[in-house]
Length: 157
Image (cartoon, rainbow, N blue to C red; front, side, top):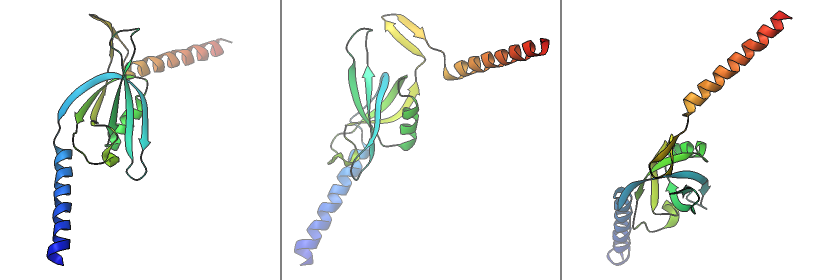
């Protein structure tokens, strides 16, 4: 009984586990994609994964191509959630051969993200956007000057 039933099941389970481990460790390709994150959702019946959509626009006025991706790291997913609607560069790894959608709905797994301060609007034309810290500092300075102006006008009355 052991030789004909249990041993083959154990061998098959071991081979399947080894296949999944190799598929998760090995990347078919790695790369970067830049665009605007327009969707991020936590999906799945049993195996919850973060599934997202990045709008890629090569030239202004052209139709946006969509890049679908999966995020397995919770910290990366939270960074992406705060950057929806902003231009980002995503670092991804393409995994081939995973047996089920329990590991994600796409083959592209995002492992990192950086916000982009430059927006290319044409060949050789780049618009710099204010970084989050500079914009926050400018807003704080404007609020402080408005408060001091209000206090000065109140004191002169």
